[in-house]
Image 1 (cartoon, rainbow, N blue to C red):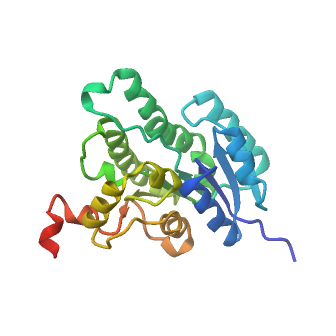
Image 2 (cartoon, rainbow, N blue to C red):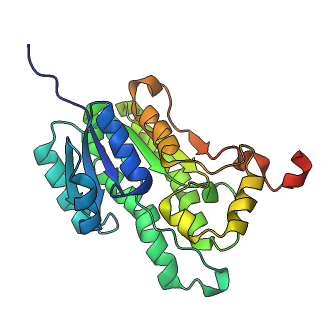
Image 3 (spheres, rainbow, N blue to C red):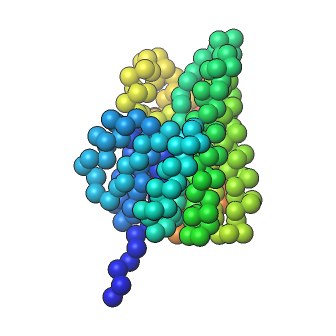
Length: 253
């Protein structure tokens, strides 16, 4: 019998956090994963213990690097079944302190990177009738202080997802957007004070942070055949945080 060619997922920001958790879940499901990250040492360390991965150093905000990545993928992979645009810059600061350089640093990765990666792999995704999952944020669904650049970039990713769904659907490509709420990453737990953690717990109906694997569960589902009729959707994976709007947590007690 001829060997079955495994499905291939390209995951950006794959060296840590949600990207690494997603990579591991794809591998457990029998996929091949092209791991994309601009942090070469972290990518090498993350990929070393994993079988079935192809680590590629690439800054998704740089068109020339994205073009080289796409050529590498085309040469080494028989198909591209899923693209997970997870790479992002989490820069928070007041409106008054966000100059244009800071604004562009956020937009280059969070928005331009999603556009460049999707365009570079569009033909391969169409050929495979594949899936795009763009990772936005709860900050793209509800405004918050200190997030003028970050929140705006993630809101734009939502609409870019809808454009992709509308235009690529005729080729069988599905595009969806996942908006994580507060996630208990190592970085978040290191920088969030006990007061911030308690405030988030009070504001989230499930009264806790999410985990990287819980976000990855939704991402890999959306890339799977089980989501074959799901496209153009903006899905908050946030423990109900977005559903509460600006209501006072005390009113729920």
